[in-house]
Length: 144
Length: 101
Image (cartoon, rainbow over all chains, first blue to last red; front, side, top):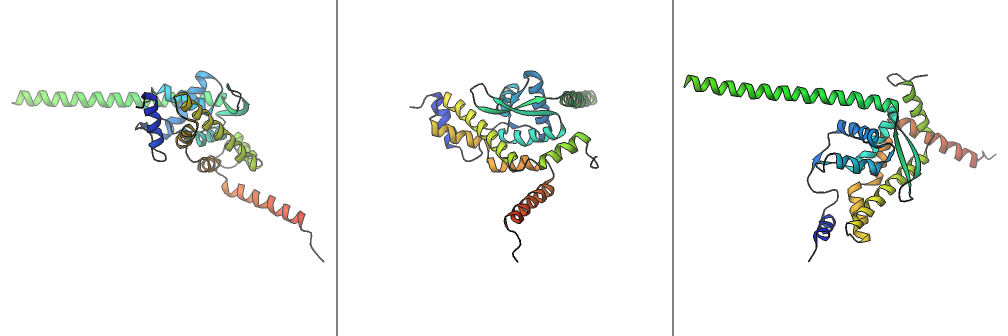
């Protein structure tokens, strides 16, 4: 009989190519913000470390397409939001570490502001909908 | 010097990319190998055997060739990179094949 860990690994092995347990995909633009935020919090990190941190940040609800992290990091290098350099990792392997630049910090601040603005707008819209539904119901009750 | 629509720093980073040639591919491959190795370590720590951990890590990461190409495409100067590669190749051929009289 398989124990809990064995069962999980059997599950991984039985998955067809590219399939994993269902989780919500990270919207493309949000990935940049999450990478910037990880680097701002924890300092220079390699791609694997960033992927792990994003997974933890989202309490395993969001699924990081781990491969898609690398094209995103290349775009961030072009934009000058991060720099990259090779160094020994914690387990003595050579790894490419990414470091946030002042331009990256500025971009993170812009993205966080935009994110807050969208969240606030959504909340206002939702509460307006709730108010509308409640007043419609009350009007209906009064008419009845 | 500046390309229309690009910030100066971005322009020079893109130009620098053209001179990296095969080094870009080698570094991307090494980076993806590192990721797969770390992931496999994590799966082994959860109880997987070495081979199962390796394959599970590769599945989770995705196709390395495709990832390398997508990363390269981000630099958005495919035609210029191909031109630079062709030019380097032409020079190598010309150096190795002097005109016969």
